[in-house]
Length: 214
Ligand code: AP5
Image 1 (spheres, rainbow, N blue to C red):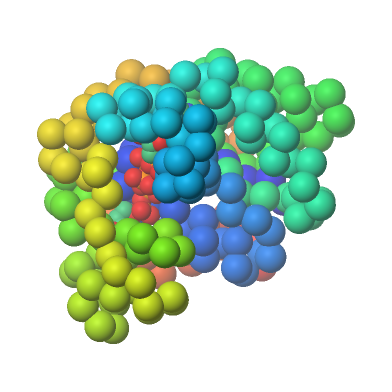
Image 2: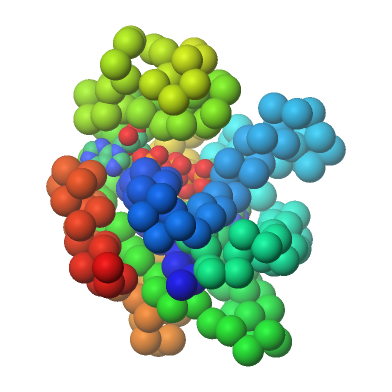
C-alpha cells in the first residue's frame, strides 16, 4: 500500500504517519525528518536545506525528488510506504507519478488531514521534538510522561527552529500557494480522501484506517 499524507504544516501528518507505519508495517518516509537528520549530521545536503527551512521556504525540487525516489529502492519499501511531506509541489507530484508509472506502480491513497490555519498556529507553539530520535509531542495534546524528556529514548525535547510563530506563518503561506494545489491534482486522479484533523489524534487515526481498510 502506497500512501501520501497531505495537509498544512502541523496538521498532524507525521503523528498519523507514524501510527499508520506501525499498524501496516510499512516505512514512514518523511522528507522533513531526512533533512533534519542531514542538518544534525552536518552534511552538504543538510547545509543547503537549512537555508530554506529556517526561512519557512521549501527546499528546491531538485534536492528532494531523487532523494525520495532512491529511497523506494530500499527493500523495506517492498510492501509499500507512507510519504509524509512529499510531494509538496506539482512538479514533485508529477515526478512521483512518472517514476512509479515507469515501474508499473501507482499511489493508492492521498489522505488530506484538514485543519484550519487558526488551530495550526496554536498547535505549533506547543509542539516539542526529541533531539535524539525525532519523536514529536505536544505540551497539551500529547505530553511526555516526564516533562521535556522523550518517552522513547530519554533525550531532551526542543522547539523546532521553524516552529517559531513568524516562521509558521510563512510556512502556511507557502503551503497555500505551493502544496494545496495537490488536493486538486489527486482529486483528479481519483485517490484523494479527506479526514478532519481537528479532533483527537486517535479519532483521526480511526478515520484513516476506515479508509485504508484493516
Ligand atoms: P516537515 O517536517 O515535513 O514539516 P511540515 O509539513 O511543515 O509538517 P510538520 O512536521 O510541521 O507537521 P505535521 O503535519 O507532521 O504535524 P505533527 O504530526 O508534527 O518539513 C519541514 C521543512 O522541510 C519544510 O518547511 C521544507 O522547508 C522542508 N521540506 C520537507 N519536505 C519537503 C519537500 N518535499 N519539498 C521541499 N521542501 C521540503 O503535529 C503537529 C503538532 O500537533 C504536534 O505537537 C502533535 O503532537 C500535535 N497534534 C497532532 N495531531 C493532533 C490532534 N489531532 N489534536 C491535537 N494535537 C495534535
